[in-house]
Every structure is written in structure tokens, then in C-alpha cells.
Amino acid sequence: MKIKKANVFNESHLDAICITTNGFIKRGNRATVGRGIAKTCNELCEGFDLKLGSYILTNGHCVDVIMKYKGFDIISFPTKPSTFTPESKDDILPQYGHFIGRSSLPGFMAKSDMKLIEKSLKELVELTNQKEYNNVGLPIPGIGCGELNKEDVIVLCRKYLDDRFTLYYL
Image 1 (cartoon, helix red, strand yellow):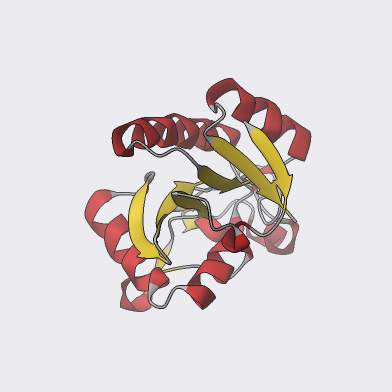
Image 2 (tube, helix red, strand yellow):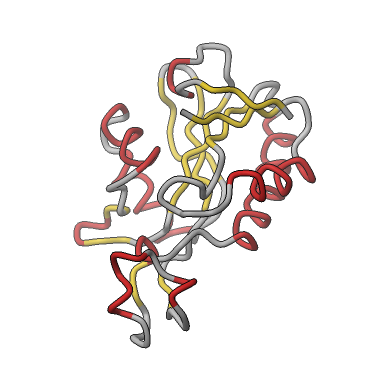
């Protein structure tokens, strides 16, 4: 696994780019893509939010190819649940802290989940093997809008990712 400081969308050698997602679907069957790499992807890839939302409604929130962009595959990479019930301030982003104790909140309000990231890493390796990708770009999952510790996430990624994968950060 490699680590690179760069915008993953500026890399032309990749077979696929992973987009970290929260799985929450809003009106019109559109996925919530209001922040981070998902927002950037939606700005560059017309209709990404609708394609992702339709995919999640049909197949569930998992790692898979959602669409193509400039010759490479765009892959959904779950880091947050679709919905959740925060039990403490450690489960929820600070700006939504006043919702603690309420049930079934949208996943975009959650902090990223290391167990879900680990599940997504396993699914990504399976997909990479199936599709025979040689170069996959993955923004370091959960460290921006997910508020996880970068070094902790990198340690987890090293457990599963080989030299076909590059972690990106800005």
C-alpha cells in the first residue's frame, strides 16, 4: 500500500477511485453527498448522488462500482451507517450533539466507524481481485468528515491493502 498527498481525481493511471459514503438516502432517491470526497465526486460526475442512491436502495450500502468517470470506475466505500442511534458524544459529530438519545438519525451525522471501514476494506480487496484492478485510489477513509485519527486508519488499511492500493490525502 502506498500513501500519496494528491487529489485522487487528478490521477490518470488509476483503474478505480473509491468514494467514502454514508448510505443515507434523501428525497428523490438521492444519496446524501454534501461533504468531503462524495461532494467532490458529485460535482465532477453528473448524477452520482442519484446513481448511488438507487444502488443503495436496490443492493444495500456496500462496496461496489457505481459508475464510470473518465475511463475509471467509481466505487462506493461505506464509512458511516445509513442510519444510527447515538449513545454518547463519541458516536456523533459535534455539531449534531444535541441529537444524542434520539433514535434512527441519518448516517451523515455519525462519526465514521472503524468496524464498517474494516468491512469495506475486505469488500474492496474482493472487488479488486474480481475486476483485476492494478491501481485503486482510496482517500484515507474517515479522517475528514468522519473525524477518525489518520494514523489509526492507516494502520487498519495496512492490514488489508497491498501495493495495488494508494491512500490519498490533501
